[in-house]
Length: 299
Image (cartoon, rainbow, N blue to C red):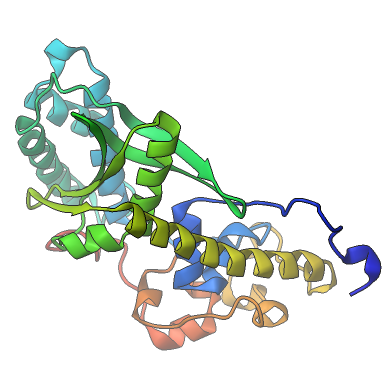
């Protein structure tokens, strides 16, 4: 490395700006991370997923419900908001979409019937952020509750699997949300909850300062790996093969060799759900593509 490329002594290190999703994407598969966050234009994705449409519809309805005047916060109105904002992408056909729309309507009505509409959250779809001397991390919390002397992070889940306290404990995103919320609002925030709407179950974990610190150090370690790969990409991309132009999708159009040293694929069963599977030969060998509606509850 030439002398002109060395960092100057005493100069502050550039912070790695990230979200929990970006960090988890790096952990799952550096190649998918590269195609998502670095390649421009990004390779065309596969078709939209029906379970994402269902999840977004439910999240949007619950966020809109809390923004209503107090007198309008009824379970029936939650169902109405769900129907009004229903997203149809990824479903097999109109009949399947309508069937899951009805199930989702019942889901949000049942869930909101258990809520106290007077118990105003501190935030709904609230963006929080914090930084260390290594990272600047931000994210959006589904709901941030005020439970007496502390804040509580609430995350809605609509997938087919019922979640446990271990899922809440191990969630990097929830831990970072709690840390950021505590720093932004200057109030304790250690409790994180996963609200699984299909089952009505709530998975809870009470963090300590030590466990939140472990998650933060883990985030910094992940960020350091990703930041080093990002820098290698930036210095090498101008000498790499030309990227495909928009509309030139297809596996043959995306060349991975110049970047695999820093962005290796991690083929496995998760490849079935990857948006970029058609551009990844290793992923295609590891798993077959799923139908866009395959992850719907009881699909």
